[in-house]
Length: 131
Image (cartoon, rainbow, N blue to C red; front, side, top):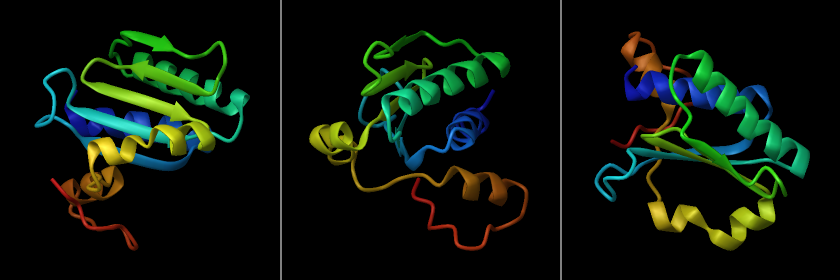
């Protein structure tokens, strides 16, 4: 599955469980370990765990492999390793403290806009896509 479709599966799974402030970062030039990083916020331990499970289930249903999942014991920060995509599901205080956005940079990818462009459509209100 190509990376854009794979990211769409992940973002849709996060949205289904009402994740907040979903950000996708292109990291292929920063590290060879993974191509993309997804960061999302959950408002409680229960929701953050549910976000991790939703991503894991959606990835498996799409026929891809989940390498591992960490942090489900506390639910403050759940990391899902999907191979070439890493997903961080974090509570607001943890996300603010670790500030992964600063590490990965200000440019994010708008997966819904990328998918719409591939179909020849633009989604109203979508932001500029940064490669």
